[in-house]
Image (tube, rainbow, N blue to C red; front, side):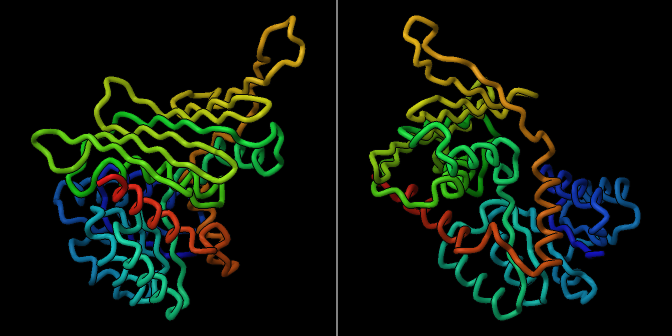
Length: 314
């Protein structure tokens, strides 16, 4: 059984704690947070876990195998570096860092210590994205002509802009599905008068083979939107993460011009919680000493592309 220390028991930390504790492969041994109210809640939910405000003290414990870092983004690098130096595998809430140079430093340490780095890109473990990847890899509906992604409404952050927050989801999904870099990037950023961080962004990526990707990220919206539209040669796919059951709808082009223009297909997909899948993946990866998803510098590629999107048109 792998002993886990969770650093940060806020909104997302509570979700990570539940999913890791629910797997027999893990023992949630310690929880760290600087806020008394969070530690009080942690004590209520996990009475057997050791509680602390000092992550360094907890991570020096040689019995801890995995550090889960769900702290503010500005602290990710410092805590992740300390955890790796103390011989822990790490899972870091996205983004891993706001700097590709720091990502490289973490990987150099991980290599020396023979430890693994995992990042919580939840949609890479969702049934929807796994289904879409199979369609793309098999070229079921021909090549992709265009992708549109709309990700709107989320709590405003003070430690990073909307691109690093919501855009990380889009960039991680695109990097995972397409396995290539865009050849051109255009970004329009919108900033509140009272804030220095952009709250909305319009991103246009152009890939080879005339593939266009349009992304809209915004914290400010009356409704929560999590929609991806992929236009293939033979069909248009809608992926709506807000749907409870029918998250994917495929509108297949009808060759019979007399009939309707599209035939609707709603496939069955795996609706298991992505964080549970992530936890299971980490357990298997450590056991087999293979981290297939995060090989080939996936985290570095995602961070570099986010940096370029942030710098575009400045």
